[in-house]
Length: 418
Ligand code: PLP
Image (cartoon, rainbow, N blue to C red; front, side, top):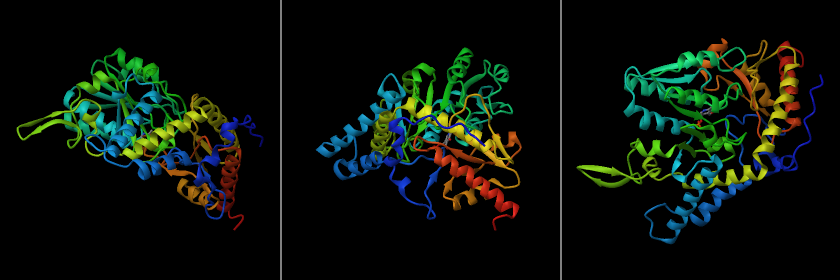
């Protein structure tokens, strides 16, 4: 089997694995082959150091602090917001709300924008390929408001059925929430086109960018979306920090969703008033060190270059698709024309969980299961898949290890090699 060789790596990328300390640790006495990047990415030393340095040198609570350290921490937190703003190409820093991640960002929109505005007869549209994080918050808010959830179907290759979309989008659609990149299939959706169609019927568009931001440049103004959500930990940043981008006019018109410190202007027992955006949506002490770490992750990713990362990951995907597809008994799930570095597959006669366990013994970390996309698995009539997902530090050797481990699993299941 001759899979095409990957084009020579960009010099910055060829060295990238060395930036990630965890990749140097053996797992089960073998070289770690980490192919579970869609679940979470590993962290470069620059991010680990940025968080540690914050705690060592600048730790204090932000806002209202009169002392030097508090002012320093506030400056770093505000600078992190501006870093995210520029990364997303948002028009102003107030359009970036720090959240715990994508899930919290979507729940924020569901509770603060949808809940007070929608009622019976209104519709929220999602797609069949959504992560549970972009389904369940809408189900909850539909129960709370009487609105209805509609679903855009997906074809055999794992692409949205755009003809069906025309029939589903209508004057009752108030919000279209869809993923930029499918975490289970790797399908890249035509975001600008979907946003345009949503706006044509007067609906808002929310994009779940959890699987996109680490793999391609995102410009929220060029995409035209109203909301865009992502998680820091899928972007080489820390867990527990992410962001919601929202158009300023929309955020400004929204009431708070959680109450507490920092989100108020005045508090009286007769009633309280709210802080300006984005503080209005950041109740309580935020993840300050996480925001600093996220800014460091963005610095890191931009130093490598999103363009170079996208080219590299596409080459890895093409190589892995060919190499794995050539193994008899392997069925690829998700063969869309436009894909990011995610490869879902089934191996005949081996349950994905068993496959994941055998690969782990070989030092190859993949994910097995429904990938928090149960409706999509039902669409394909399967309980789950095995999934390899790529990051900037993966290389040809990782794919060779994956394919060799899959072959080994097949031998084990055939009773050879015991
Ligand atoms: N949306 C997509 C497409 C995802 O892949 C994920 C995580 O896997 C999420 C949302 C949820 O992200 P988080 O758990 O960081 O909130």
